[in-house]
Length: 42
Image 1 (cartoon, rainbow, N blue to C red):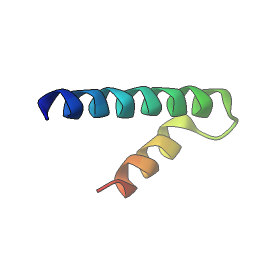
Image 2: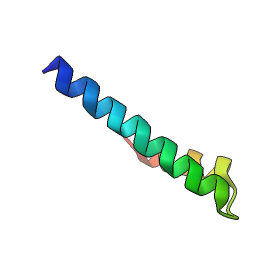
Image 3: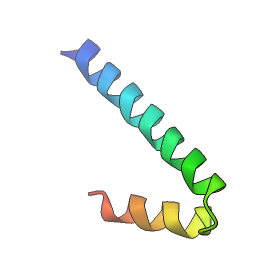
Image 4: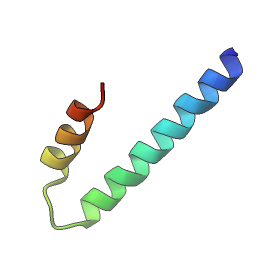
């Protein structure tokens, strides 16, 4: 169980990093956009 949880957390971190990279390349403000997305997540 612990192993699965760790892998899930790693996958989430990887996905968040990919999204951050996309936001940085996009013309939209990366800080504000990232903050809004994280705020929506419970």
